Length: 319
Image 1 (cartoon, one colour):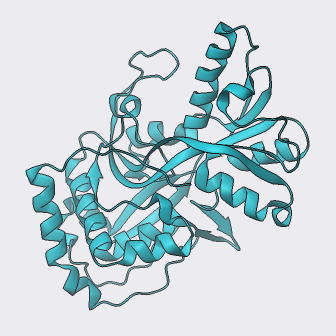
Image 2 (cartoon, one colour):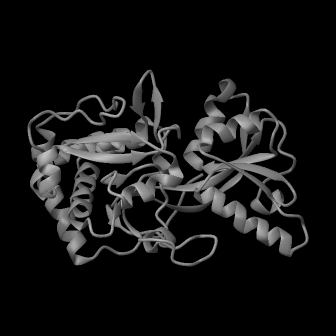
């Protein structure tokens, strides 16, 4: 199932940034390609040598040599811990970005629904955690009330994914679409797009007199999967890469199955505070560079998620 998303055309400034990144591809290639596995909290392990885009970073990041990352490290295959190491799509991409920028990416674990507040309080420099870039998050709008709830954030978009529904294997109950969830119970991770979709669909179900959806939201997706596996819900919803990974790995592939097609394909973005434009633009250039030199495609292929690959580095492409 191929995820699709219509992105904004690049501005002259973004085209110039991409061209500048491509110009230094040769320099980066000379550094070679090391192991892409992140160690717990320490993030990428870049050596003392500066990356080709080091000078694009804010002075305080250059001095620290570290970009602090807020992340919910319990969302395989995007980010998770195994044997004390942080691994997954996001940590591997952070390693590659770290090489380009000449700094380490230090992953710090937190629940997903606290990441943006941690970013605003400057606990982290960025949030990188399979976070969907939406207009609401860009503008700081609460998805339930539609009202301003805080300062918005900027995103550097690096992947595309939709949302999938999955059930216990062999017990789909005829669920193929979100409308089929009317009158049923689903489990989701709190504060995610899946959570928002469930609440919106429940209102539609109630309006059509089909019965509201009972939604049980958890701090992380693993807890939601445990609830579904134990028979505590009819279905679960999460981002397609996560749902597909759970279906493939849980119980040796015997616990779950995906039902229907993924919906709401949209970009994952690295989130930054609105005023942090220098770091935002440096990350965009670094992403453009690793796309151009092929490192990005290697990482995406490694995790079997090529359908979600992007071909350009874009800021705030979410709708």
